[in-house]
Amino acid sequence: MTREPSPAPHSEAGSIQRLARAVRVELGARAYDVHVGTALIGEAGERISATLGAQRCAIITDSNVAASPHMATLDDSLRAAGVTPLGTIVMPPGEATKCFAELQVVVERLLDLAVERRDVVIALGGGVIGDLAGFAAAILRRGVRFVQIPTSLLAQVDSSVGGKTGINTAQGKNLAGAFHQPSLVLADTNALSSLPDRQLRAGYAEIIKHAALGDEAYLTWLEANVEAVMRREPAALVHAVARSVEMKAEIVARDETEQGDRMLLNLGHTFGHALEAWAGFSDRLLHGEAVAIGTAIAFRFSAARGHCSKDDATRIEKHLAAAGLPTRIAQIPQGPSPTVAELMGLMAHDKKVQGGRMTFILAHGVGQAFVSRDVEQAEVERCIAGEIAGNA
Ligand code: GLY
Image 1 (cartoon, rainbow, N blue to C red):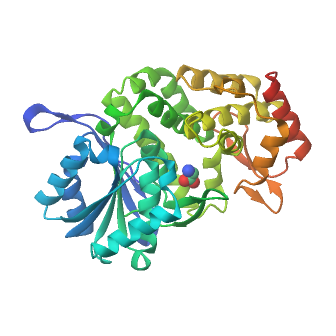
Image 2: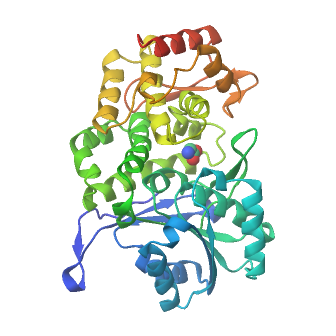
Image 3: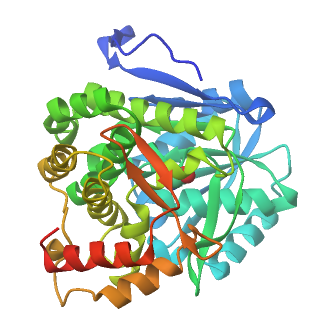
């Protein structure tokens, strides 16, 4: 993984201040660059042409993004660079789009557009579009190249990088999919200016997760800059996105298919997924909010097991709260609390169960997460009971 010496802003003709960083995901023949910066969508055509030599592409997006200025900016930029858009496939927004029926729609539309293996599929949107378009690209003609242009914070710092693609099934989230790395990722932080605050905060939970799992100094930076990020100050956003992408890129380069270290990126997800499933994957609890509560629980659990200090758990909890994120089950709005049996049942179905044993990501301290498979079921039950009762 390499890092451009940036983050200093530089002025361009017309005195528009540009910020740009590039992170390389070192995966040998499948290595690619993630560009993080301002106004990148307007350069997409040039970058796709220069990096991939593509002359034709198809765009997959959702109806919200299709109606935004990003769509026209992307289209103009592609045409100006001589990359012909064969068509734009506009999907309904929302998690329900990540299903077999919509995957079929996308794949058949791509075939109707005569997308060939030397062409490029562009995913313009949040995590739903990135995961769906990536999976469609993975199976279309046994694999075509794809470019991620993530427009949500969650997609920029997490789902657009690392090649996990897929859809949901009746049995659970992301249970059908493929590892298919993008050929290029363009994370344009200007796209975040119209993101609703709640979505921004939910994406920020993954940023805190990165700091909490592997970089204490990054957490210190976040503690000092959370307000600037929430105000969407370009320099703060670019640094936060780029640092998170760097951390993810390093982990993915070490363990692309999640045999070991990549599991660290699941910090907060074992508890978080159970809560998200219990809340019905609804607006009641967004994925990032569930990860926020899950991360706080993972640190409190780590402290209770003697792996880290209570101060570490309190520090994580305080920063999540400073970002306006929930840290406790009782903060999930509307309706009754879950029961221990409900959450235990949901955790048992998690992808992270191996040979009947749950895998937990715990921490020896801030920035020192580790994979643990030695947690007894009774301990988890005690932890969850304490969390539900609010005395953990
Ligand atoms: N979102 C976790 C991973 O990409 O591994």
